[in-house]
Length: 401
Image (cartoon, rainbow, N blue to C red; front, side):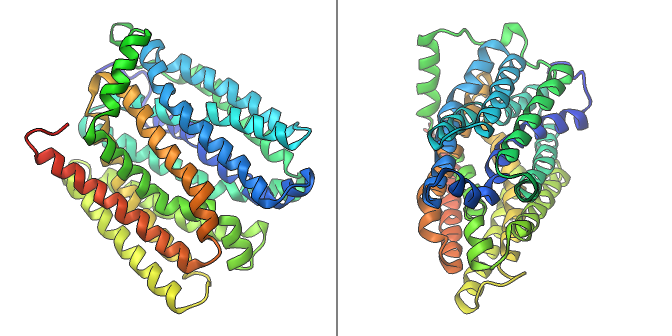
């Protein structure tokens, strides 16, 4: 393994801060939806397009972040992405019309995924086995703070300074992270290990990995497990304003329990590393998620939305999700050890493309009723579990892809 010039906690903090860009860019401006609609004289449904444009561009570019880092190194790709993100965030704040806002949201999406994708490759470059699982769990636990605090920060900024201040906050976050990474982020991919940046071998690697049945079902499992929770995140304005009758200062009622569950699940994953097998960890995670989904359906079928019962199953679900996610991710990254950046890109693409569908199609259909959201969570979880079972079947098959 390569030298580790900084301690694991500091590396985890930097990688988690990089991964936080995604949820910050989604969740911080959710309380500003009504204000943005008023500022540009558009409907709330049109404001939802700013999220869909961001997620689609995020999904497309995740196909390339990891590949670029396999060829040019991890540091240069991350630093370039952070610079573009900071500029795009300023552009959003200064947008003069709605089309400009959409343009700069798309540019944010093209750059925001670099930390998540390349960060996963850095973890696997630097550590193996239980150490890798512990670091992945530590990153997940710190990263889990973002969706909890982002809408709270967004609500404060919206109330005090208006919607443009949210994007100025994101620009400042990106700029500070750029300085921190330039100062301390190590390069974990030495020159001899880099892949040539040539069209034919790149295309060959894309085809090889994209045609892997095992990678496909693992990436699908990761994405769908997360989307059982993300459905509630992206539906937050409807849940907070319409179903629970709260205001822009009270998004924490939904986000804090959910993210507390993420942090607890990630902590447990790190503690269990080396004590039980990754497969056993994943199975325990699924048991917790299924129990949470069952309670969610039962409560929403019998009672009106109310605190804390509407958010309690979301919290329990995220415990299981965060418990399983590091192990499933590391299994996927180990399928192609010479193309970890590209593997991480494909994981990120599947993840981002799926949450774009959730945000643009599923959430608008289901967010009118808590029972519909509960059924949506259960359906996504069941599909993710089937994908995990498909991977286990393929592993046993003598001719697995």
